[in-house]
Amino acid sequence: KAGVTQTPRYLIKTRGQQVTLSCSPISGHRSVSWYQQTPGQGLQFLFEYFSETQRNKGNFPGRFSGRQFSNSRSEMNVSTLELGDSALYLCASSYDRAGYEQYFGPGTRLTVT
Amino acid sequence: QQQVKQSPQSLIVQKGGISIINCAYENTAFDYFPWYQQFPGKGPALLIAIRPDVSEKKEGRFTISFNKSAKQFSLHIMDSQPGDSATYFCAARSDKLIFGTGTRLQVFP
Image (cartoon, rainbow over all chains, first blue to last red; front, side, top):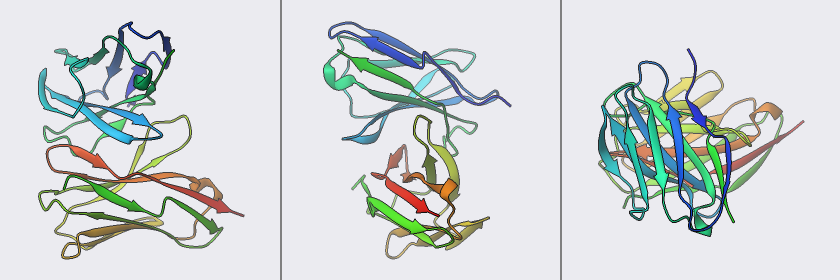
């Protein structure tokens, strides 16, 4: 079974721009979560989706948004990029609705200049 | 109350030794406690997980010990190998997964 895939793997953007990251979950998994990983703040929860519905949202500004499609693929969007948004963005999928066993993708490394 | 405190920040162990990483939590609503292993340039990989109704779970060389009354849990890596050198994260979940700050483990031959 293929794992979680994320595209693109690397991205360089300029302050003020917006970016869209994509995540394809493991086949059969309907729950997708997004995390931001930085050296200073560690792994922080962004949001979680199940069957196209946002179940939970972390403590991030409204510039961070996401959605899930009917095939369980998910995208997250960051608008008006700031230097502090530079991070590794990780997507994780799980089979169950509660989102317990989460399997992570390799992440998208976003650099904002 | 949503924090998970992890220690130590870094750990150096000789090959064949036991690596022990500790985590503590406050939120009694947490009902699932996984450990993740992350290599540089990779996403975290689920290693082993435990529910609070169990005091210990073992999978190969990896063991989770769970103390519900003390609100603590730990990862033991027996017979540590250089290939175990990675960053380890504990986590806890109620309505979302909260991660500890990570422990960088280095195993020297």
